[in-house]
Image 1 (spheres, rainbow, N blue to C red):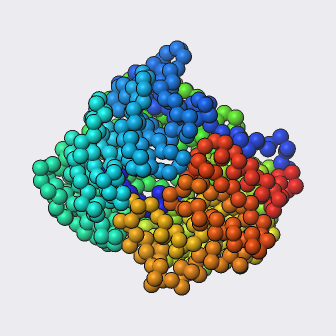
Image 2: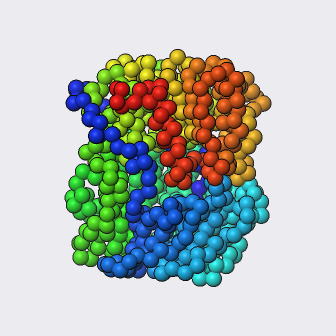
Image 3: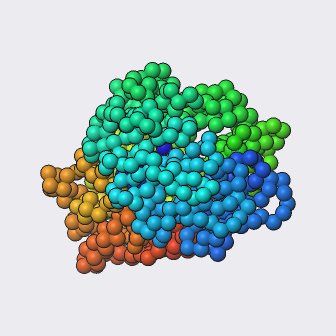
Length: 632
């Protein structure tokens, strides 16, 4: 099931000891952090006989195939030249599906290509229409469900896509209020979530000939998210916080919504999703995040598999990225906070683990920095969890710091390899990331504490983290920069407005600057969520004074620090005018405000050459205002 969400973002006792002085040869070229892998994104075909991967062609990541165990030259099956392929997957033994957009407009199309090559076919070739994958229907190799906002821009109808013929058949027409759909294991659309903008209603039908009927209505503050059916299509796994603070996984009767078996819950964090074994026709495990990704196993077979892989790959986080239909061959990823790691082909029948390659071998793991979990208290008593990355080779005392609030804002930072963080640490900067109030995964109360707090308590949480880092003796209070993208970009701007003496500089990447214009320019398919957004962010009429106070563009006269801004011209979420307003306001006051605009990008830069331009500008900007590694 594809869930539409608006705006798609640990305790440590710091033992600080002196370290050796950094060597100049430890400085790694910026492009090595952000350039394409030579070969990555491995997948296995449904029959387990063909290996696929992506590698650059004409500067863009394209898909190649090769028979498992073959030394023959790989065959390129796609020829995308404008943008990288963001993701792809196999459908059956001889078909690959991927998505693409145009210049970052996020109006994705779905493209199908033969597993041995041939001409790729855009099966949703409608200008200005966004396609989403409602359900890939992993049990049905020749069919999948897609959503299109072709009829009405604000909502998505569901079509069955015949992958053999490319034919689209309407199977569920949106009456105008449905925001997500779900199917059973036979590929029939059986449930949906409708909204009036504030309250959500779970709808169900017993079969495709019946009408959808309302079953459970909740406030948007509650979560009742159907995930998937049991093997017999009689029970529904649901992520629910009804009657709880933390989201749990429960089995419910789909016709009544009545909760039955409690599958798994925790008292510290929300539980995430349920992994399904197609071959064994049962749920394998539930995942969740504390300070790391963790699993609770529901199937002894899954526990045995991961235990065996983890014993073969000690010290790394092990995940499965692709499996054959019978789940005897699989792509295994071994990663950590200091490396994107290696990829392996595991054959369960022969217990053979074959290394396919390292993703970024030019980034030595030993030269990367450890990402440590931290926590601190806010001024009003909340506990905020986050991560601190300290540069190698320097004493952790009075360091220049980059504060990096995540986007979303209803998302979260997690532990793992982050090329931005490692790049900054390699330049000698400590990096502080925090899951401020509203970040997901920490329960209902923590999420609700963010409502109508853009620029207020949410921003205070970030400020309190900086203050904590200064008190720890790690941060040099004169050399602190704030950098973020999307909501993190907004937090950057608001930080410079609200605490103008705290930051030496800021970097705003596709950030919101004016809450009034932002709410007016949201994409049409966010319109069903507008009332909810007004409850969470603020109503432009009822909360006019509050939104004005929390709009950086309207308070730019308070900014003292220099600011680097980057913006995609085709951004459908944060309109280019958001950045234009800030640049114009600061230029009038003589503030140093270098501005990078890319005409072929949207919400964030995806093309390699544009990323290089941005990070090169950021590196020079930070060196100017925080000092370069050679100066530290």
